[in-house]
Length: 230
Image (cartoon, rainbow, N blue to C red; front, side, top):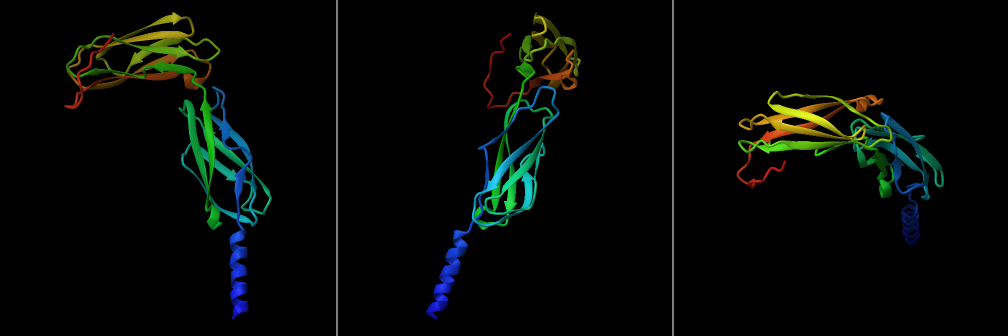
């Protein structure tokens, strides 16, 4: 009886001392696409630093913009693995943190989270992105500033509106670099939501058309009165 107890304890001790530990060679995988990139791919290296084999059951991403795959399903202790990741840039701008979740057969590491940081360069900066007026208040003109952030000059060549009840114009402040767009609603008697279509002479198709927005909102009872500055 004692022998059985000792063997059971040894088996339990051996089982608990064996573990899998998938670890990246870097703390975070960084992606830095070029302005013209639609997608960016990368490879990453990791190791099983544990003392037992680990089997990958599934790989999921927290965002449809990011997908990943690993070079095999089972990794032995000390074995190196290689993964591939593909990020669809779409309309992303700036710094974004994403992750891929790997499910394994190891209870001690049932989910391995692979962190990614994507830095998408801002080629056209529109500030503010949305101009707002309150329903029934003064419809004074407001200004949106457009800055071309790339190394190559870029010009606004056309400007149109999705709504008729606004007046708009633009002027060049620094040729190929900075512009001001002035917007004024013809009246604020009705709720309105619209966009200005900004067309540029960019050589990169996705920067040839940009949008800025304007709106006339109905003030809620909790909204304080604000002064609209020109």
